[in-house]
Length: 167
Image (cartoon, rainbow, N blue to C red):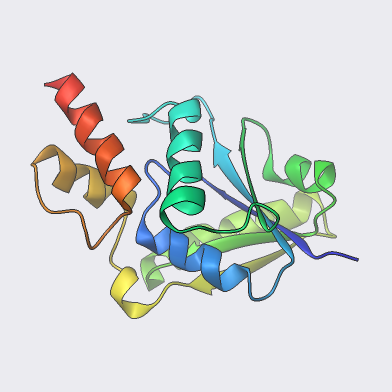
């Protein structure tokens, strides 16, 4: 039986930190569903379809991940509902720093209350990627800084184009 995991997040935009977690997850699962959240209470730079396209380009074109191992979807319901739909009992979450842990711990507990068959696995990105956040990447892009150490070529291109549209 294949081990399938759900990796939910906003990915607004996807960064090398996210990609690090994806790489590590593929060492422990057979298939990863990268689930792009589209809940209404967030203020996104990119809409869900744009974020899905950026993730697809980053993973499949820039980095040549295997489509048989990674599936990219968008969703606007509970992560536990996705687990049921994709027959997964694993949720993967990335941790950058201790400050992430409290929120992630509460989230894992709530998911467990919603479905006690689901386990959350925390993966840390490598040290050089732990400081990267989508928020900071967007700030650097808006201020026209160098993004090569933070995101793939297609993500950088999408950010540049978006901020050129805004100005």
